[in-house]
Image (cartoon, rainbow, N blue to C red; front, side, top):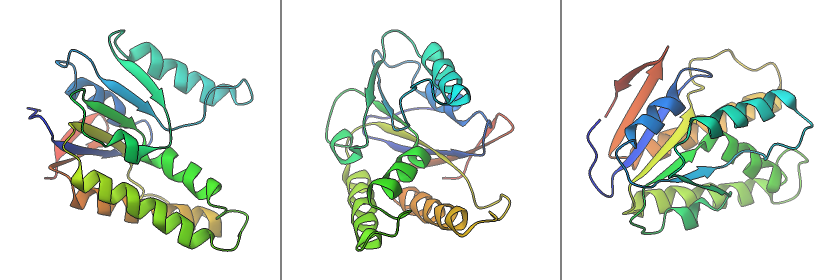
Amino acid sequence: MRRRRGGRVLVLGGARSGKSQFAERSLDAARSVAYVACGARPDGQDPEWDERVRLHRQRRPARWSTLETQDLVAVLQPDRTPALIDCLSTWLATAMDDCGVWSEQPGADDALAARIDAVVAAWGASSRHVVAVSNEVGSGVVPATSSGRRYRDELGVLNARIAGGSDEVWLVVAGIPQRLR
């Protein structure tokens, strides 16, 4: 994949599809990269999650810096250093939790919509070279719970909106990347 400064690239794929590795390889030539980790920090409470994070960290070159944040609007501000956001799926899950969607707090839906709108607007306006990874959920099994269906629907809409403001969109299936845009 050839890069130009300021490109916004979305990489979609299912669980364990190779999407993160593809996104990482797309930035191999960069002198430095800001790796933006949107997931929970390992804390020993979930050994499987802790192992996933360890493997991601082990794969990254030493010249990359890591930023653990949910503030994607700040990440998308102009910067000469390319950024890799991994991933929008974990960002959304945390945003839904922070906004009170799961506990049905008053105003939760509006708070979530505002947070998503801000990220989508920042993505569309960003001049920074940024690659974002997200799970493609539209082809999967329909979740058995209403909360699972809500998350799947919100992520599908977020992915579509981010794709709409992207210069390139890739789908990775079974380790094989396919350019969609």
